[in-house]
Amino acid sequence: MAFERARNEENKKIRLQQIKDAATKLFDEMNFHDISLSKIGKEINFTRGNLYKYISSKEDIYLYVLLDEMAALVEDLEFNLIKEETLDTKNLAYQWATILARHPRYLKLMSLLFMILERNSNLDTLIYFKNNLLPIQVRMLDAIKHNIPEFNQEDSSKLLELSMSLAIGKYPLCNPSEIQKEATELSNINYCFPNFIESYSEALVLLINGIKLSKM
Image (tube, rainbow, N blue to C red; front, side):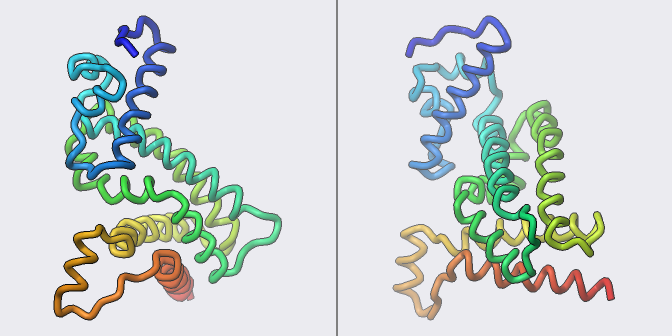
């Protein structure tokens, strides 16, 4: 595909999608730190100069990708959690964990968000990201309030924030790299990496019950 500069907003969207698709492909195949703008550009015959016409950094691209991953996740959450009959705490936590496990790219990007992506992105891109994050969070809060109707807005927001932090910490712990597995096996540490769904859902039950107890 030869590079041709976009001449209107629709074509700019097409170019940005091509860039996101290339970045996503590499993210699924490589360590984030090994990905460069040059490698992303090579996937679609863009030079670094061509890329800079649409984005300012590698981190900018992955903020756009993360928004797409969040949109896919929230659709999954709504479809499976907003039913006529509400879920009890244990089933809600298990379903939430199961849904998250279906979106590993989201979980991996979230683990990079605050320390890498946000800190190295362009200000305008970060503002765009945060503005588009708001309606996604509202939809997530609706899924919580549907199943825990006794929670007010503050309770639901607290649970969403804590559950997000929990996922960021749990996913890398439950999905070690090959070198982490090997080092653990060869060391004197007697440790078995936990299963994400089981570990996350158990912790989420504790979070939900803890918030409920704090209201009493």
